[in-house]
Length: 130
Length: 130
Image (cartoon, rainbow over all chains, first blue to last red):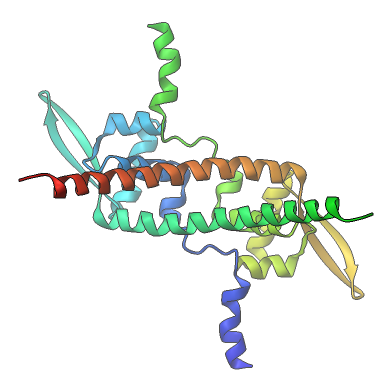
């Protein structure tokens, strides 16, 4: 019995999706990280803000969370003689984001299987002789 | 100029992912809805709890949120002479979940394009004559 209870949770928690890291999963941060993944050389604060449709305050808050998790780096530089804040995804951030994506793909696979299964059953009912 | 500013936000908010409904996007609720989509006839409270790896309290709290949004229905019945709470996804919940999934697929497409683009560039650099 002991062995059984040790292995059972894995099967039972089929839809737990523990790999959906909450730091990444939050909607605004998911958009920010996807955007930064697409721009590996980094994006200025203003451009990231516009791409993600966020306010200054919201973007700052979420940047802090991502920076604390070491998923992004924020640096200051001068561009056209004006100070600019540059945001860039780190190697660790990239890796964790890709791990997260694999779980997201699993959610989609599970949902697609559920929808497929149901339309298969519906088709079978329609085709069955009455 | 007016026309331009009217169309610009659509292009600019490329990574906003507004369609990621917060009621569905929360990790536990995403698992619950995926689980209920896969079991359209409904699941007893205890089974849903185990499938999603949640505690009684957590599951109750999230069920209330999903019920208030009319994404699920909760009913009481007797099974083997014992009272049972049955949770089921509604037609509206199913529709909204599928809309949400389409946006989730977009996130994955965007991320895959970003990763692909970078490996293409790397390959091109490696192949370029030095």
